[in-house]
Length: 170
Image (cartoon, rainbow, N blue to C red; front, side, top):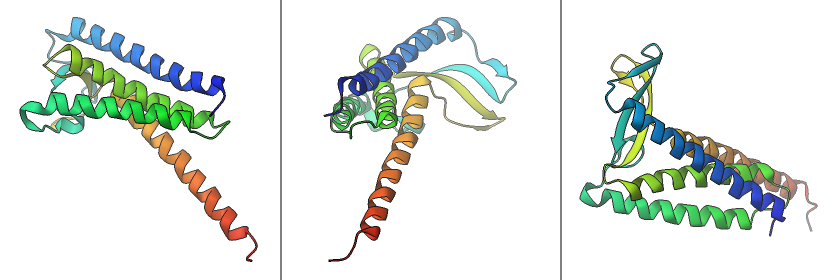
C-alpha cells in the first residue's frame, strides 16, 4: 500500500476537483439560466448552460440513463480508489491522475443525484455549427486524468517490456 502522503494526494486531488466542479456548476446555473450564450473568446469559446441527462457526448440509454450512469460512476470511484490503494509506492503522478478521474466522476455523480435534469454542462467550444459537445470541469478532469493515467500505464508497460528484454536468458 502506498504511503499515507500518496493516498492523501489521491483524495486531495479528488476533493479539489469535486469542489471546483460543484462551485462552477452552481455559478453557471445562477448566471447562465437566462442567457443564450456568453461569449468568452468570441464564438469559439462560450459559456452556455445545458443539462445532459445522458453521458459523455450526449450518450443516452433511455429513461433509465440517469440511474445507469449513476451506478457506473459509483463503480468507477470505487475502482479508482482501489487502484490508488494498490499503486506502486512513489507514483505521485498516478495518484494525481486517479484523483482527477475520481473527482470528476464524483462531480457528475452529484449532479445525477441532485437533479433529474442531468449533469450541468456549460463550456461550449467550436466554430459556427461545428461545436464540441458542451462540457464541465468534471469532464475536463476525467479526460485529463484518463490521458495522464494512460501515459503512466504505457510507461510502466514499456519499462516492464524493456526489463524483460534485457534480462539474461536462462
